[in-house]
Amino acid sequence: MSPRKAALTSLTPVGETALPPDSVAFDETEVTVYSSARIPSSSSFSSAFQLADDLILRPGVKSTNTNSSTRSRSSSPVKTMDDLAMAEPPIKFFEAGMKAIEPPEEVSGLYEELLDVCEGFQLLPGSLKVCVGSCTT
Amino acid sequence: MLVRVPHKDFANLSQHEIQSYSSQYEIRKLRDIYFEARSEATTIHSREELDVWQRVTSIREAAQKCNEDGDFESGWGEMVYSELFKVALRTGHVGWKNITPARIEPKWLCPKHLSGKPLGSKMVDYAMCLIPDDDTHRSILQLLRHLPEMDQNINQTRAAPVRYRPITVNVEVKLPGAGRNETMVQLSIWVAAQFNKLNALSGKRVSIGIPLVSVEGHDWRIYIAYQKENDDIVSNINSPCGICLR
Image 1 (cartoon, rainbow over the protein chains, first blue to last red):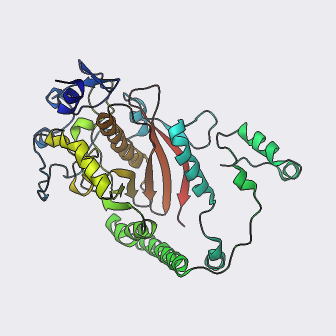
Image 2 (cartoon, rainbow over the protein chains, first blue to last red; image 1 turned 90 degrees about the vertical axis):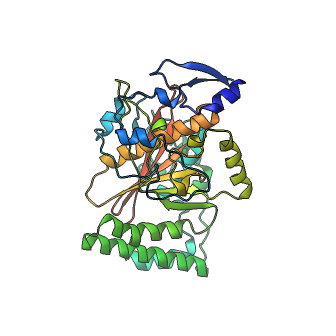
Image 3 (spheres, rainbow over the protein chains, first blue to last red; image 1 turned 120 degrees about the horizontal axis):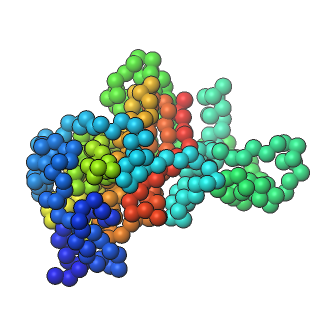
């Protein structure tokens, strides 16, 4: 089986390190592979979630309320952003415009655009100035 | 925020000096366009511009009413959020879906406790998503066709409304006073799973930013989630600003 086909046979999370990996080369990128059956059974998912994982949505079949991708909201012990910062990998929050935080090149364009919007730069057409003025006074 | 230069200094600085001064304190570059003389705006607005403005002001009034009446989240959804999405996404190939019941496929959940257990699943309320044209739709199906049936979805969820429509912006709403802590936990876990899925689909760490929007009554805030380069899967979330609809 070709590496690409092997990788496609079971779509798996990239960068997983908690489980013993079977490594597969994939387009010059080392991809760690494990089957869904090897997801720890002692995870915090309910047994219902484990069961739902075995259900399959078929293309063209109209979803119903038994859709495995939709169910009632779960309760989770994760309540604070500190929990996320302590997780692996961590999720961290930064405020905008901090000199120490520089988004990667690929994100900087979007970042700049959003900052422009937040400053109100080129947000509303000038022709609406009269309307805006009458609304805010 | 922009650096506020004292007025008396500002008057004597050239454009280059202001840009240089600013660059010491913030990463955002003051673009040349900021210094261009402002042309006199036309006072003639088009019918569409006026229509949009009137709809926005109506939404603002509806939001004030929801707040005064203590409406439920679903009430805000009907009268404010849905209407705002309709106006904001009235053109182009981006749509929106209420995905309140959609859950993350457990396979894509991350991050984990140091013990190795996933932190737990979370859900969000709305997603802005691409409405693919025929060619893009075929490409998405082609990408997914060779995968096991349970993986044949473009997002971190198999929920039907966004199964083949790539999610571009994730939105979580709360009632006024609910606080943003739980909202950010929800959005973080949701988007971390999205990165996990996208990484797996592309076979490498994807280098994109995914906007997140947290809404608490009138308080709208935008965040950008991205994966940090020196980690395998880290969703560092950058908070550029807050937008308040008041």
